[in-house]
Length: 453
Ligand SMILES: [Zn+2]
Image 1 (cartoon, helix red, strand yellow):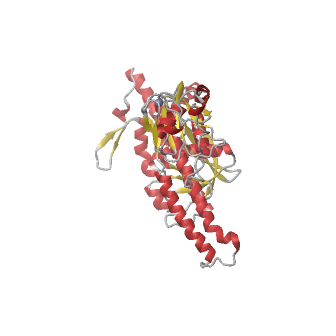
Image 2: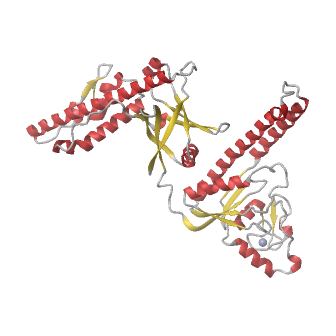
Image 3: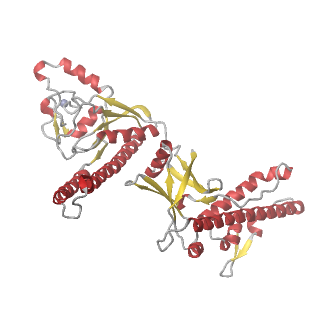
């Protein structure tokens, strides 16, 4: 399924020497390309019309239609003669004439050939006149000529378009057309976010000049893969344990296959940041760097930058982790993801993950799951790390170390995170645990689960 979002662009174009391209200069270049596009489309109509006339005459004489390749021949630069299908013939005939990027050029050409063919019947019936294109043509842009960027620091999206071929780059001294995207509402932001994350695929789009607003707009086409949004098993549950050792650990009840996302990257990052923070704090206290007398805010600015870095890191990490989880769920045909309801649970007494937001991770999982038609169910996590996923025994000694799980009843020995995720993957596990606890004798009952799992 393909959809279009209209994006207002603000020029951020620099020439090949890095100088800002003035708005007038940019417009002149893009208007030139619009004229080239108009020219090309009209040439396509002429060539198609001519070929159509020829085939008709040919048919009258021979009672069959001619083969394009027998008649559409052109000499190449090395003198050899090459035969073409109609669109290839037009491509070769006009390609030297324009500054349009070859990919966009062939996109325009194909589209124009297509609309000629689509309209031919109506034209012949006299219901439509022969197509003639006006000067303000939208510029076709192939998907590989569109690059989306996101700047976290300013929360801004940029798009870079490749519009010129080699000659064009030389002529205008511009290689990439970079624009800042004006984002007016949340739904546009969500679309951009998904395009950027690769949840949506960008496809061939159009650059359009709006004369009234005197501004360029990008009609960005994006598509979601219907094949990927396949119907998943509505009863198959993927259990997700969020923890300190592994921020995310997921498995399906009774299955060995698992997804483990390691926290090493976070620990490394944290160490670097803590060191930097300590250094900056000292610096801010001493004020030896010229920030003296500029008030608390100015002195703390470098520290603020550090917090932004942390937020950015967390955002990127959670995006990646949630995407991996959704991919894993789809691969395993899971229509349900079960997460822990974190309300009232302090997951990390450890410190290094103190500011880590599992809520952020969960909301990213929820958003991406919704996109793929996966249901997210929250369960009460109490005792999920102390219960043996094999025999159901709940015992406070089942989880002797941070990594280990050893069942006191049946001796099942496994990585703690895996065992917890196995429990979380069971339907109504919180109700089952409640019932199991009511059955066991008082002395076997464990205390309320400790904060650190
Ligand atoms: Zn057991």
